[in-house]
Image (cartoon, rainbow, N blue to C red; front, side):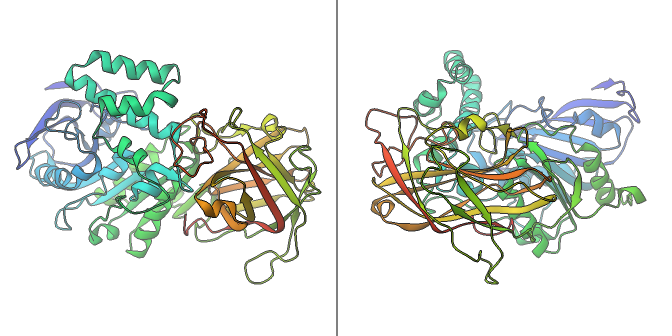
Length: 545
């Protein structure tokens, strides 16, 4: 066992070693352990992940060495079939049993005082929520950027697969399988496809060749418009009474999963904190480690926070001002707008109007919109998706050039006389009919600066397949939740398109499930947008997807 000198500012030296346990079915699970020098025992922090224990999610968190220097034993485990652990990787389905065995083993170690917390994001966020029963649970949890529903929180938005993101993640897992099997050629083929972006077309075939039984390929083969066959995990009911620190990002695709977890924990009486930052999945702009340490100190070491740390349970960062504000995900700013156009909103980005409307008292906007706009989707030049929560370039982006395209319909408000806070989930409803048995709607909400710059704040997608796509029906597109403040002189803009490649696959217009980029059988799709009853509203973040 090696002793490593403490990092600058660390409280004490840290010891590092590997540890392993054998599960009842004979599989050896390997972990790396960081712990303070001395005999202990200490409270323990656990992370269970499929990417190799040495990485320890340092893409977003401080190194385990730092937590160990603060007085914790930190165990990062290779899950079954990953890293150096034995067995066959089965994805989320394997984690409840393995996690429970690990927790029981951990509490029996002489260096653990029996008090255990779990932390981690993404896969590691969900692995800490899955347990065999309520008899063996952690004492506190900090799940970040994860959710329980594989269809709604991991694989799709609005009935459309996360194409670029979903393929990239599935291929990362497949490459680890190649590495374990000694298949260097397979690993290199995947790495090259990710590097030159050819995975956007070749990804499904690469998965079928190198990871035919993997979660990612299974998700892509299921219809996200149909809940049948999709798994929604159900942790033991006792878990929702445990203290939780919930972490989400405005530009992270798993935000709906985080909000769902917050709602479940609140109903279960959990002592919890919620933080939603201006973060993408991998960029947390300075991290949350100090907050996380204070959370575990309180619940695992009975240390009350300093008065300055007594912050509200729910804090959210304003996307435009950067200020952290106490806001509840149950509330919404509640604005409503109508849409109007003389028919040229797709040719002239400034022609369509976004008309602020008072509420009718029923939660809907009062007063009519006006006009009809035709939008033509040409699969030869599909509208690109950019930034937002589904982009490989996730985050705030400038989209003025996209709004100048003729396959984007824009509606712009008047310059604001005073600052305007938007809090909640933007939802667009309007009547749309297509001339083909399948189409997509892709929607962006942006702020138009006095300089002319267009800063995209939130995006959403929705998909319709089958004969009903050709009927004039009221359609609903829910966008990513947001907290943003527009300043006096700025204008709000709503942009509507019919593609967001490669964030979602290009709709072929045939009624078939989209499965990649445009092809020779893709059809031109003409959409008729009827604006008389169209409405954009800001609704609470919690609710149906």
